[in-house]
Length: 191
Image 1 (cartoon, rainbow, N blue to C red):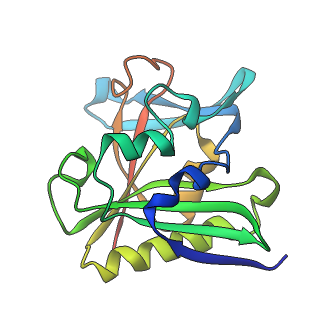
Image 2 (image 1 turned 90 degrees about the horizontal axis):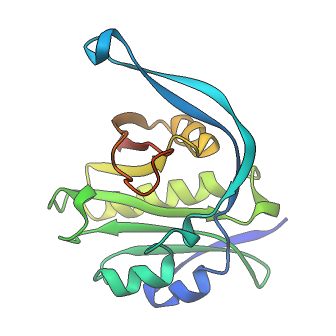
Image 3 (image 1 turned 135 degrees about the vertical axis):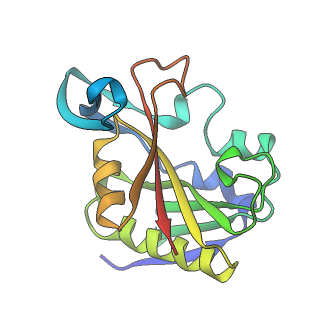
């Protein structure tokens, strides 16, 4: 497999969207309060039955084409992965965008807004390469931290971010009022 990673303008988001982020949810991290929460929180891996397919692009108001409509993404970074001519993955990094809450109105933070790898190419190192390029891109802009949002039902992503050296920084069980079975997890990497 000879893949290449290229930085592209954010105007290619409709093409970027051809790679599905869908994955099979077979387990989730249950959030268990310790001592009513005063002793912290514990994450416990538990099976999900029946298993189901989660596709973030199908959630209402989400997906690459909708992001173009919602925010000024002109200062964002976009990396695409190609296997020959076929688009097989990508990463999108948000930066310097006042309406993105995760950036806290700061210009020294970046958020890995989206990372996706075609199902046939997962577990091949493409995600790690995209993450590394995203970190470099954020550092080039003077960022001191990279933040990433995922959910407790995306166990593979949680494990991936932990392997990349990220720390779980926040847990919000009320972040998604329309997705009550999902809990928001915010990861961070100090740069």
